[in-house]
Amino acid sequence: MSKYLWYSGATDTTGIALAQALGIESGKTRPRNANIIIGWGTKTSENVNLADIKVLNHPNAIRKNRDKLGVLDLLKGERDLGSNIAAYYPSTGITRLIERGDIEFPLIGRKRHHQGGKGLWICLAKGHVSAAIAAGSDYFQKYIDIASEYRLHVFDGNIIYAVKKIENTSEISWIAQRKEVITEYATKNNIRLDNTTMECVLKRLVREAELPDRIVRSNKRGWKFSSIALNTVPAQLKNAAIKAVSVIGLDFGAVDCAINIGGHPFIIEVNTGPGLQGTSFDKYVITLRAKLAEMERPPARLRGQAARAHGAVGADAARNYQNDNAEVNDEALAHMMNAVRSPAEARRILDLMGRR
Image (cartoon, rainbow, N blue to C red; front, side, top):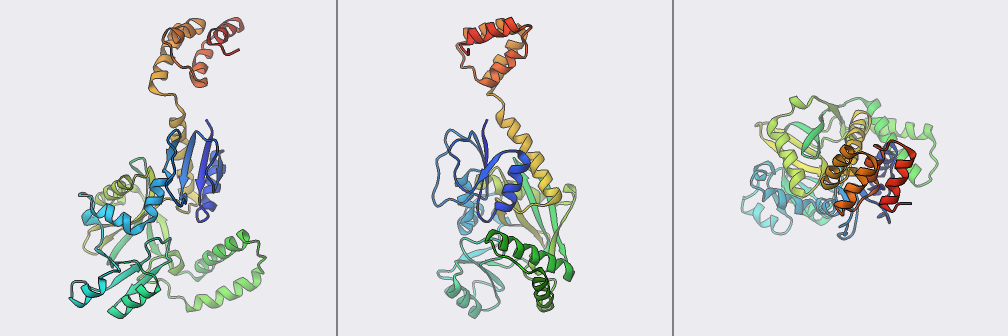
């Protein structure tokens, strides 16, 4: 079967690396001929019809997930997830709610379509909210007083890998992280960089950074992910993460989530094309490879016929297929050919199946 990994401009680094590790084709555009498609942060302007193709993370589900406000509505409306979503308010009408005293600060302003730490405003007062709306904030969410923050990688209804955010106050790490981002951007845009100049500038800028930032926990602000054992993640949080991925209609996703200081689990958002390195990358390669092999197996009907074919052996097996009036594909035929006892019998099978 022809397999294809469909990534976006924002997810191409990991997407390309995954495709290469899996030995499959990849790209930012819809494939013309593919039997199986993996959506990796796929970006489409409208829904696409892939009715005759097997898909992991359908582009339409990914497109739904890009609408962060819409996804909050979806998850909040789910009975088992409603309490795991922090209160949120569309920008329209929020000023009146604040004036009536119906909303408590702090709030986090967000764009309806955002990625990573972009489009984020920390609001401590009404004036901050007004400024955030003017700058493009589409909704506001109650700030979660986080005790522990996680990223749980969900695949096919299971947690396959888990990381926890920990402080990373090392200036060397901060410089290395920013250098990596700048170098990647320059490479994509064919810009030549002077390494000495870049390091000099970054060493100056790190003096102005507050590491770690206690409000926004990102790798740009003094935090990093650290691998943890799955049995150390609270069961309530794991269940909520698995449920969130399912409700959105995804087959897999990296769920950003947290436990607040009161011990309550919260879902923050789901990522459909997370950046992967080291162990997390290897885990996805192993998991995707196994899933692709499963998807390539013939339907149960043909597998049952193939089993009977093995019992019959060779040319007799081919007759069984004909008697069943079954459509025989290459994989089913391969099961029969594995049982032949001589070149002559192989030719007889091909004659019977009309394949010569």
